[in-house]
Length: 44
Image (cartoon, rainbow, N blue to C red):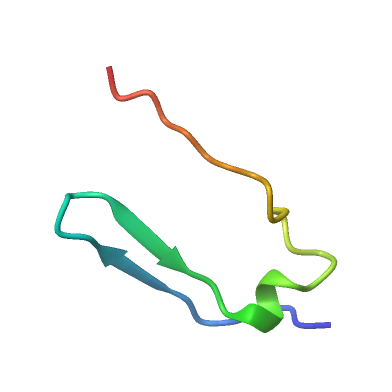
């Protein structure tokens, strides 16, 4: 079980952001997101 990890936040050239989460943390059974989860934010 991995309880913590260090990720990164990148800003792409198109203005969108990419969040990197370490593999061991993302595969932990207690990680809050599943592979098919998407997060959308309505900006308008």
